[in-house]
Image (cartoon, rainbow, N blue to C red; front, side):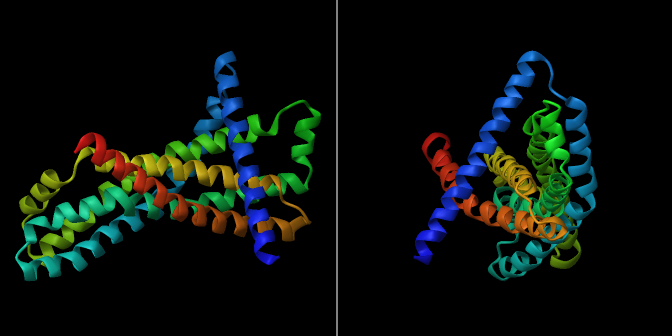
Length: 263
């Protein structure tokens, strides 16, 4: 009985998220078609989501790149394969670690903020007031946050890759004993454009997940201040769970595409 209820609740959640996602796409296309898209609100959200997250993302990327070189560099040095260190680290960052770690950081910082902001609007009846004034909450509140998360997570992932390689190169030169040219040549020889594109596709999907879940949790907030706290926590936990689960299917799909059509 518990398992049946769990599956039912999951399917209900999945259906609600899908419905909100489809409504977001519909109103986006509608506003673009009639020339009413609120680009100013989008830019404001992109600034809040992206620019304000740069310090955390920079620390995450730099430390990840440095730690990867430490872990891989010593092992490869014992095998006489130092020239592969840069390529292996860059591929690991581009394919998996940069989009995953960046999305988790953004989910913790931005997903919770979106849920708390919209949740507060919900319990103070500001969203009901928008509907009273014939303003669609999805059009006014969800669209800029959804696309802000999607666009900025892609840009932040690029930034994470760059900062990670900087951190890795510093450790490779001053701790592992590689030359900078060896590290750079390894990256250029082994990292392919499709590795970067695959990671950026993941980042865009993860950003959309964060935006949809944060908005959904905010819209479904109940029971006052306690409910805002629960929605905030739930948005972060749910977003991270969805990101980790969806990452598997994206990885399989991207790898199959590379094997079938590129290699």
